[in-house]
Length: 356
Image (cartoon, rainbow, N blue to C red):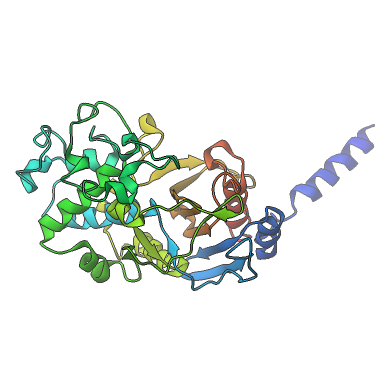
């Protein structure tokens, strides 16, 4: 019995001594193909892109393949970029997180302009009107994002209307927060946002009435018409997957923000579902990682296009994915739940490096 126990322990020791499963890019490809993923995926470690591939077709009805150099809607990943520019202005002393809108925009036509702070806008705590509450069209699209609402869908129009809640009363995700923040940044810098982007975030540009960004599809059909320009500083950027990766590297290396400003940007608040400023920052449990990893997450979706942008600062890893299939037909899942495509993609990209 003792001999048998010793043999079992010896075998267990041999198994335990085996090296961890090494990073294998082929497993990412198999994962994407098994899920019928149509789009692009990038994984980097440090300054090296270790995985970059396009999958599937642009349209369900044509054989045109996805390409690495395609222009994608960044949707609400835009908020991560605008929050970074805002923190650059804080670092320069031209903006204060705890100053109210009225300091920079004295005649902003909302009664709470003396109480809504820049931090409230960045953290979705402003109480401003929500475009999702505008009247619905027969397609189900809020009128704010349609041609019908074009005249009033502005920072000083609909977004400056009667508040839906008291400033700071509670978290409520709201595109008007960033639409107003974008207009305020233009006033503070005396520079159009397009110019600020060109100077500070090369590659990213705003979608206007005409765009070469890829179209989206919902259940095999073209998405319903949407006025993409209405999203502005809340969701109106476009660029390639490599443009977004260069932005990520700028954040990760301190080229865009110093350590103090980045720490403020990435301070996730557990009371608000780990929302930080323009992104979520949370301890994520990933299959294959011995301990939770600190994850900076920003997702976005408009119509039939979805994007996921993940930064893992402690391991110097970035993971980006875009698809032009809607949430109803392709689900990224929720990383915090430890399940779904995004979780499995991150687990493969983050947890299997032999030198960890």
